[in-house]
Amino acid sequence: MKSVKNIQKITKAMKMVAASKLRAIQTKTENSRGLWQPFTALLGDLPILVTMLGADVKKNVVVTISSDKGLCGGINSTSVKISKGLHKLNSGPEKETKYVILGEKAKAQLVRDSKKDIELIITELQKNPLNYTQVSVLADEILKNVEYDALRIVFNKFQSVVSFVPTVSTVLSPEIVEREAESGGKLGDLDSYEVEGGETKGEILQNLAEFQFSCTMFNAVLENACSEQGARMSAMDSSSRNAGDMLDRLTLTYNRSRSIFIIYACFHGI
Image (cartoon, rainbow, N blue to C red):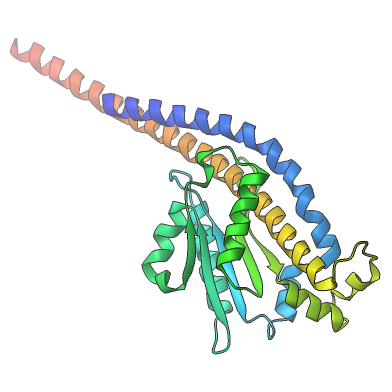
C-alpha cells in the first residue's frame, strides 16, 4: 500500500509537470502554423502531388519525429508505424528510401530492423527550449547530409490534451518543383508570380525549398512536442487513477484481513 501511494504521488507530479510544459509550448505551436500554410497555398497539396509525380520521385527521405523520453502513450509507435509504411510504399527497383530520425524512441524501434536505411540520427532535441533558429540549423544539417527528391516529415499534430493526429508533410526538391512547373502541371502557377532581383529561377526555388523545409520542420517539432506532453498528461492521469483503484482494493483486503485476525485473536484470547 505504501509503494502504491508513492507511485501515485510520482504520477500526479509528472502530470503537473507535463501540464506546465504544455502551456508553455502550446501558444508557440499555434503561432508556428502560419509559417507553413503559405507554402500550401503556393505549391498546393504536396502529398497528392508526390503521388501524381510518383515516377519522378526516386529518392525519398522519411524524417521521423519522436520524443526522447517515454511514458507518453503510443505517439512514438504511431510515428514509427507510419514511417515504415511510407518506406515500404516508396521502395522499389528504381527507388530509394532513407530515414532521418529525431528522438531516442524512434531510434530504438527503427535501428532494430532498418539500420542500413538510416542516414542521420539526432537526439536530445528538446534539451533546450525549442526556437526557429535551433530548428533551422537542424534542417540545414539534414539537407547537407541527404540527397532527396521528396522529404516526408512524420509527426503528430496537436489537437487537444486527449487528441493528436498522425500527419505527414511533404517537401519537394527544387529540381522536382522546377520540372513540374515547366511541364505545366499543378505547380505551373509559380510562373505567374513576378520575382524581383537578379536570382535565377533555380536559385529562387532552392531558397524556397530550404525555407519551406525549415518552416515545416519547426511546426512539426512543436506539434509533436505538444502532442507528447498532452499524451503524457493523459497517461499519468490514467496511472494515478489506476493506482487509486489498486489502493482501494488493497485497503479493502487489508481491512478484511485485519478484521478476521482481530476476531480470531479475541476468540482465542490472544
